[in-house]
Image 1 (tube, rainbow, N blue to C red):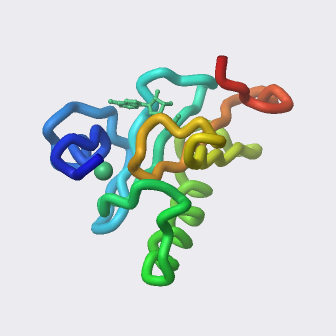
Image 2: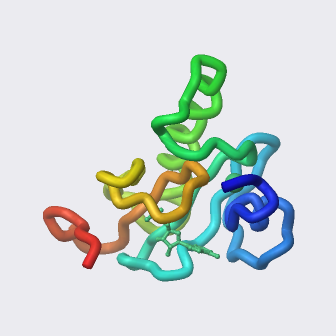
Amino acid sequence: MNTDTCIFCKIVRGEIPSRKVFEDDELMAFHDINPMAPVHLLLIPREHIASMAELEQRHRNVVGNMMLVANRLAVEQGSPEGFRLIVNTGRIGRQDVYHLHMHVIGGASPLPGMIMKS
Ligand code: AMP
Ligand code: ZN
């Protein structure tokens, strides 16, 4: 996968549409196209990092900022009483899109014990 064909890089470049809820100079967040809960956002670095498994020391700040932004977005976007962050990683983690992304999942009522893929 390279940045020309990566679907989330295309979203970063504005080549395909997204329902954007946040952006700054290093991160972007938008609604998941196939939401699994009333609040289901994807938070990504603008930089193409394929997965959590590819993280390097130099990514420490951006990954830390993802946590802080996820927290704030969950509250602002309708999940003020808690939320769940998921980072599917690699084959075992059933990652489908190989551009690092954090699922921010929540809503008004408690989530199921675990969110499973079918
Ligand atoms: P993962 O299985 O963790 O790699 O999750 C990929 C997520 O990206 C899935 O929840 C998809 O619904 C979501 N997704 C794929 N394409 C798009 C898109 N164009 N806009 C928003 N979300 C997308
Ligand atoms: Zn990418």
